[in-house]
Amino acid sequence: MSYLKDLLSSWFRHHGTSPNLKAIINSLENAVIIIGKDNTLQYANSYWTHLSGHLPHESQHTVFSEFIHPEDRVLWLTHLQKFYQSSETPNPVWLRLINDNDDKVYWCEIRVQRLYPNSPYPLSATIFDITPQIRSDQVKEAHYRSLKSQINRIPAMLYRSRNDLNWTMEYVSDGCNTLTGYAPKQMINNAELSYGSLIHEDDRESVWRNVQKAIQSDKCFEITYRLQHARGETIKVYEKGCAIFSESGSILAIEGIIFTLNELP
Picture 1 (cartoon, rainbow, N blue to C red):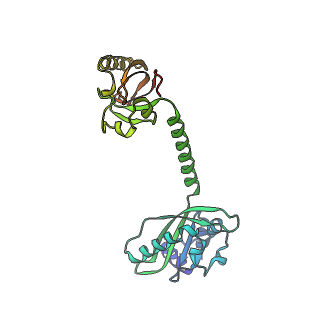
Picture 2 (cartoon, rainbow, N blue to C red):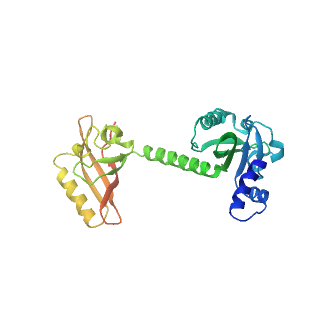
Picture 3 (cartoon, helix red, strand yellow):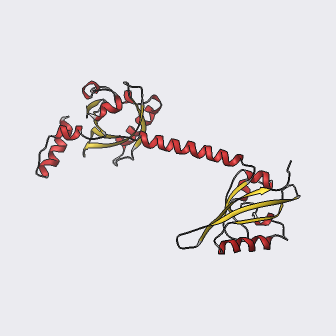
C-alpha cells in the first residue's frame, strides 16, 4: 500500500489537495494491484475481491499466477517477461481470473506499468473486468454462425454484387455451388470467372436492361433468364434483388437471391 500511497500522495501534493487516498482507490470499479519482485501480491484494492473472491489482505504474499486460469498462466508469464525486458510499456493482455467464491471465470484486461520510472520492481497493474464484452462478442459470433448456417442451407444463391456487366460478386452463399456448379471462392471478385459470363449470351442484354430500369425507378427487380451450369447444360433461373444506395445516392451494391427453376440432380 505504501508504494501506491507515495505515488498518489505526490500527485495530490502537486495539485494542492490531499483526500483520503485509500477511499479513492477502493471506490474504483477496477482492480488495482501491486506485484513485487517475487511476483507476489503486495497490495490489492477492494475491487480485487469482486474478481478473485479473496479479500485484499488474504491475497498478500500469494503468487499472482495462482489466481489466473491454468490455461492462461503461460500467457501471463510471457507477458511479464516481455515487460521486464522492454523499456516500453507493453500492450494490455487479456486473460481469465478464477473467483474461488462462486467458481466464476472473469475475463480481464490487465495493464501493467512500472511504479517507479527507474526500477522494474515493484510493478503496478490495473485490471478491468471485460466479461460482459467477451460474452456479447460470443453471443454475436454464435448468432452469426447460426445465421450463416441457415443461409447456406437455403437451396438458392444469396449474393451481393457490383453493378457492372460482369456482375462482380462480393459475396455469394454456399448455394452458389448447387446453382452454378462452381465454388463461391471461384466467383468472388471474379477470381476464376464472373457470374456475368455464366448468363446465356442471348439473355445478358435483357438482364442488364431490366435491372437498370428497376434501379432507376428505385424498385426491386424480378427476372428470369438462362444460365450455363458447370456441367455444360443450360438451366433456367429466377432472380429477385434490389440496389443498395449510399447517402449521396450512389449505388453501393446489388443484393438478391437466385433460385433455379430446373430440377438439378
